[in-house]
Length: 558
Image (cartoon, rainbow, N blue to C red; front, side):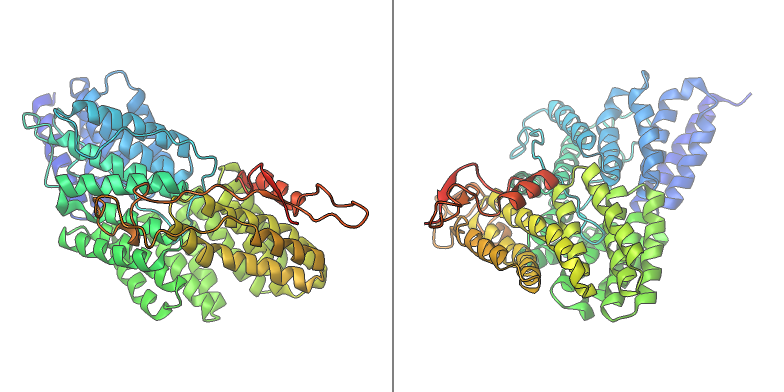
């Protein structure tokens, strides 16, 4: 009969070796070692605690390699098991939330992180400076960036193979550290878990495009990590850069991404460095610098492919496909998109796969397959609607309208307008939820104006003079930007200095309300008195996308 003690030693050695492989950036090798450890421990009931810890690590590496459905099922089973060590729960919750986020289960991911935040905070001997309570998400919109637009994950936290007081937050993908948790050491593991949790919460807010909350959480996460583990600042900096990029603030996004890349390279975090390169490549592509984007993509893929990082590799292929399409190499683009789709489907990354479908639809349209393009766009829009991603659905409808315009069929102009006008109104209205004037200005210039230009172009081509007139009146009646450029901070710079190229809200930001509805000028016989400009389009936008487009107040246009 096998000696359980000898088996326990073997399991611990295999698990420790797996943790080292994971830290080294070799998740597939780590997964294989954890699998061997689990097989060794499973037949021995007296090793149940050790077996569960190995299962946590096995599920974590499964998620890291892209098998999120399997990871969710395993971690859910572990969380529900009555004999699971309570000390492991916070680390399990972080890993659980990451896989939930990839599959679009945003509410459950947020609930897991909120519980983790409470547990980690309660374990601290003293309150952590700058780390306030985790607020529950209340936004009604939740668009998830698609391939190449992803926020950064907080981490895959590995549990040490013994019986630590706290699981090994030091082996986190998002917040990596020096080694397994010491069961007899100080409760610094709780602080590191809290850091990972804050980074994860800021990732959720970015991906859901809850901008005010994302601003607060990214600033909080960056400040806490800088105070406690400045060597790990790369990950929160990535989220600051991701937030700036997602809201059209390209200059600060580039600055912060370069700082994040330097921090990840200095911290010997190759997975983080690869993620930053993917983000920088997306930024360069968006700003017309494709020649700078492609080398970054190849450098990122040189790490993600051998390491088995499924979703990150898919993002790299998707971005290469986009560059190929911009050069007119449609076959190459389609092949790259197909490879990315295979990986994303295997990973269960439903929102990211839906965003990829929009790219694939453009290729199908250009290749003369309009029915296929229509099917892909409908699938993407329906998926975003089912996931509650209102803004992402609006962006999909706008892309659909742009393809209809490029098709050159006059009979499709009415349909293109039906898609584009409500979508553009919803996208434009997003800026009113932003806390600072510079943020609203960047969103208007870099995100909303291209959408509105498409609408004006379509309306002019369709001969819709009245629609053009109403669009002009409505746009002229919007809330002013109210920039804070000349307003000094009340007490000097904020805790993060020139964070996002502007003072961190709410230090001295001017908030604004959505604009009122515009009452049309009555004609000579009184017709039109009380009618609201674009009333049907505004109602359709709010119904389709779940976004507030206009305030309930009304103002006359005369």
